[in-house]
Image (cartoon, rainbow, N blue to C red):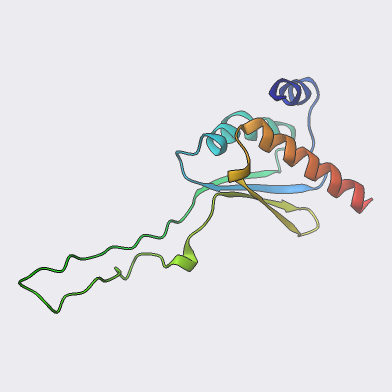
Length: 133
């Protein structure tokens, strides 16, 4: 499957018809996200220099607990004020912005390989261009 996508992209210039921006929100340790940014983002940008491809590290919610010591019986667990709350926790995803201003979110947990992500982006672009035309 990866070979088909790579051959298609290397053989002919790929111009996404409806995609204006691709924003990857993930941890740096995610091999799917980093692989996609290394393998496929440069190819898309080469074919379409005005396309925006960005990577941002996802915010993680962390709770810091303090230990209750015998010397301080009034101490309880607390959350540091600068730590994001659970509502600010971000899942790893890709945000696709289209030329008409709409967005599509792709959950990165559904993909095991970068070429699967690229294939889905191509499918979304094709579906969007067919529905717009």
